[in-house]
Amino acid sequence: MNALMLSMVMAGMTGVAMAKPVKSDNEAWKAEFPDQYASWATAAETSDIVDLLESNPNLVVLWGGYGFAKDYNKARGHYYAVADVTQTLRTAGPMGDMDGPMPASCWSCKTPDVARLIESEGEGAFASKKWGAWGDEVGNAIGCADCHDSESSAVALSRPYAERAMAAVDMTFDDQPANIQAAQTCGQCHVEYYFDATNNNTVKFPWDNGLTAEDALAYFDGIGFADWTHSVSKAPMLKAQHPEFETWATSVHGEMEVTCIDCHMPKMKNEQGREYSKHNMGSALDNFDQSCSSCHDSQADMEAVLKANKAEITESKLLVEAEVIKAHYQAKAAWDAGADEAQMKQALTHIRHAQWFWDFATASHAIHAHNPGEAIRLLDKAMDVAKQAQAELDTVLSKQGVEQPVALPDLSSKSAAQKALGMDMDGFEAEKATFLQERADKEWPARL
Image (cartoon, rainbow, N blue to C red):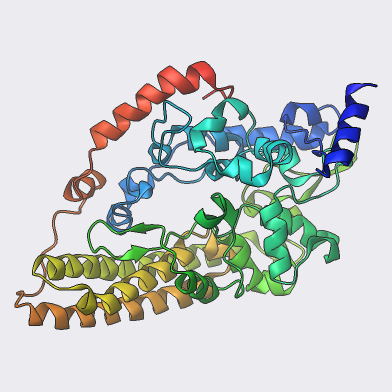
């Protein structure tokens, strides 16, 4: 009896489903799909690292006490997903399998090797370990098996948590038309999610109430979840990830069922005249004629609209950031003056909510193109809630006899803001450098 036959018999005897083979090696798809692979590989050209904390030090304070205050760069192409999550200070420097701040689920959106490991080990067994425990198994950046079945090559959801989430919002994958199924493969990662500590730190999308920022906030408030406690205000905070699927779903494009694929993976023709989908996933404007011209007449006009949208959103977000930061420091002054939890609870809740609405709007990549109206709506709401927090803290501060306005430290640069928060950046960077040199470069397959 050969090994395959034996495994089938044992699976039947034990009632355990056989692991479905997952072809996670991106190179293994190249021969059959050369045009798609070649276009995917061009994402390597987007190699520049842009430090967003350097360009906007407000972010350091807003994420005070959380990993993003250490390190946050502009997203690069899918090609760099494994390198970027390995090199970021947020994953620290775990020298052993049980070390480090991040669970294994932190790999979930970075590599098709996760789909393979979930199949072979089980979702809970994979997620229950630390991030560093699986580094020796991860050698492929986001690629073919993330979105395609390894046997048929058909579009497929490779993450069981995404299947559950789609079903929760009445979008069961098998019931959707082909274009929405394709968009759902993007929605495995381009979403808001968290790691569920009650279920082995598996990934969960907070969609039980629906897809809006308010729906997710109600869900998190209902279960008493917080990503972290803010180091300045002590507010229980939430960090939005990158909710593009959610903001697309409520957009004009979403209503018209114009999807991620239509704009970011246009149909192209190779030298032989055969059609294929471009897998670079770059800006739609790079392929205006293929991606946009069926609905938009002028690329120049479209670029002008997008530029105006981005400017409006940037202006609004910076105003909101200033007010939320002010509330964080008002809360610190209140605590320092002896305020108690009963006095602080409502204001801290409003800080949490204001920053959530700000983050949901601004963490969604290219929202100025995908859903600018939703961004402005959420930022306006964030401003209103931040002002509520400030008013409540004004009352607390007055009762505690604190002179106002509360003075802010120097937050004019990334380094100044990190210093104001008491962050040991030299220590974080030394820890990461040791990890990269002594563990990742020597023991892990991904080349950095």
